[in-house]
Image (cartoon, rainbow, N blue to C red; front, side, top):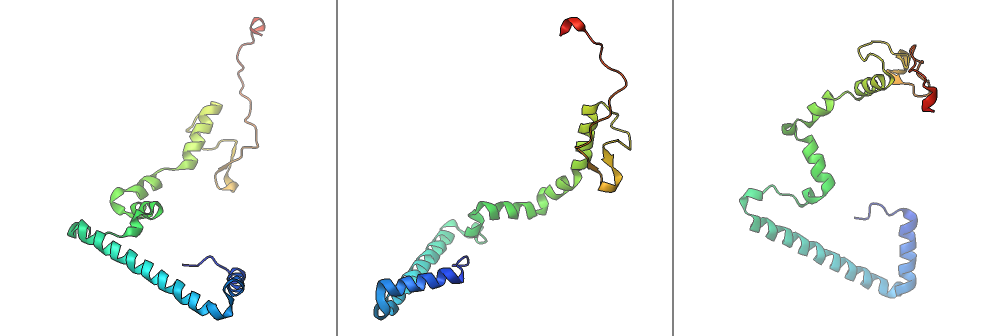
Length: 145
């Protein structure tokens, strides 16, 4: 419940509680707070049980934690029936980016060695290098400028 409270925060809360309630009333206040927390937990558990009973036997495996979007997505991504892992593994981003880069620079995408890819860098594209200029230039039209 209080997983993100450090030692300094805990000491600060205790000192403030002693200053506000005093050492005489502090045990009674702690008991009242604990009793309230227990009642809230009992109320939430009974509400969960009522909802499960109302949903019927089709939802006997229903968990309220599944309503959290992160948990739901994580469960769906782990589901083997959807085939998401096969889709993710079938998509090669490096190959796709190399093809796009070759298409932009007008090079043949089937060429095995492109000047901007260095084999020692693990097939990474070096974006700091400029592409080599092509041998043919478009015709210059002085009237168009």
